[in-house]
Image 1 (cartoon, rainbow, N blue to C red):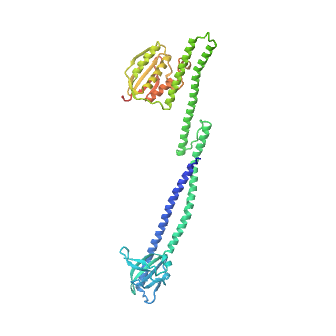
Image 2 (cartoon, rainbow, N blue to C red; image 1 turned 90 degrees about the horizontal axis):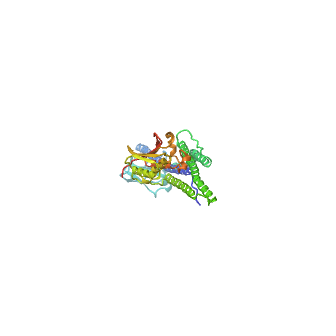
Image 3 (cartoon, rainbow, N blue to C red; image 1 turned 90 degrees about the vertical axis):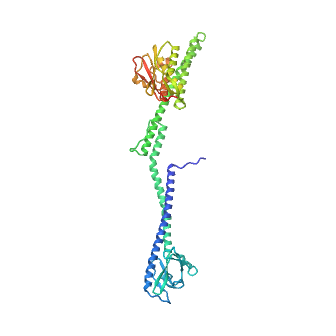
Length: 461
């Protein structure tokens, strides 16, 4: 069974919560470390201050050889003063007044005072030593003579402060994480709500009517741009859907006409088989069969072209040769006169098959409407090759001629069907010209009509 994936809202919330948790973890560690270091530094400074005060006091106050002096407590600092050998306690803070020597001095050039304190573990109460930290030692001069002064910090207060901070962090940071997660969840919900609204609206539109559109809010933020993009997509879908429906309707209509003719012809002939003119029947079947074949061929080409399945070759193609071939074909099939005097050598780089199909479609269209003759012309115009094919028929309205390059559009539907036209030939012409970097259009002439083809010359192979 396929597991359901988390929503974008849930994934983003989880990502941000994890990110915040990592940041809070680093922040907590850094904060505890900073506070601990601050307390240690403060304690060290306090030890130094208290040791200086004690040194000043002992320099003027007589020390009794038989009894140790009890020093008052200053904050969390405890002081112990011993003889230079570190065997006898001369003075000590009240908190450790009864304890023996807690540490001895050892020379160390790396230390600020040149001495370091080495705790005497076997002499003192372990619980007292465990509470003392930041031990400092230095030589001083007292009224009794040279001495060693040891300063310690009662670390219980530092440990307590750090412990309180750790508990605070352990309680407050998860609460902050939960609060941040909730706010992120709500914020993402508000941010994604317009997107979900657009999705539901598009779902309803797709299920009912493609003519509806998504409301566009003011401004130019991401949501507004998304709504405009969706509406543009719906415009294209509506156009494609309408085109598909029209295309299917037109194809059905075009196919129905020859099929109806074929069925009616065969049915009439079969009813009077002994008196039927089978030659006429065969001629009708052949004519309508060719119409079907031409229509199917055009539809197949357009379908492949729309899907991008027609690959164009890029070789040298002489358009003048194609025109001379078409002129010979027209002369062999009809009585029309074909004027090729304006055809000059015109070579382009393109696909021979599609260019030949383009010119043949235009020639067939001209033959269909010509009265007695055709005119062919080919020449260069800067970077384009220009081909013009005209007929001496009734002509067309050039101002509205662009519609003739649409599919299934004819200038005279009844006449075109009678002469075998499918309404797809000029659509194919426009597509081929466009794929060769050119265009197709009707131009004004004194008599009849003239279709102008422009093809990019390209670089000769």
